[in-house]
Length: 114
Image (cartoon, rainbow, N blue to C red; front, top):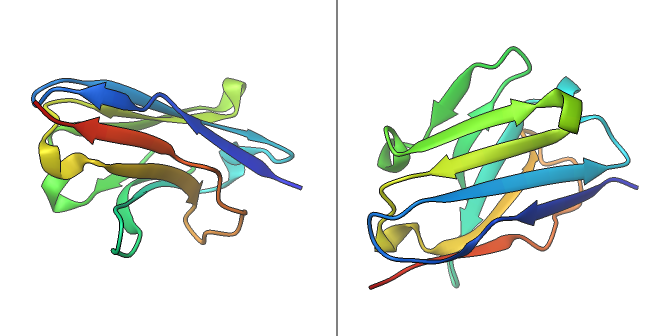
């Protein structure tokens, strides 16, 4: 059974940075387009960024120029570098394949507040 584990979240002031990590056991992530999602209470989970097998990236408009998704196939991991964080980035962040085929991990909480 594939297990996704997200980490790296925390409490940060506006303008700060965090680097999220997504590790997987039970599967090789390098064969999948991988996504980062986020969710706030009462709202649907939304796509933040994705990275294809070839390394092509896409971002939702609100994070373009601030977030960078990357992958390290040797470490079977995917990352999300988040810079210039804003309060509206506060959410629980999750990773999964583009087709959301794995069970969701516990996510990692990102809180941006002064």
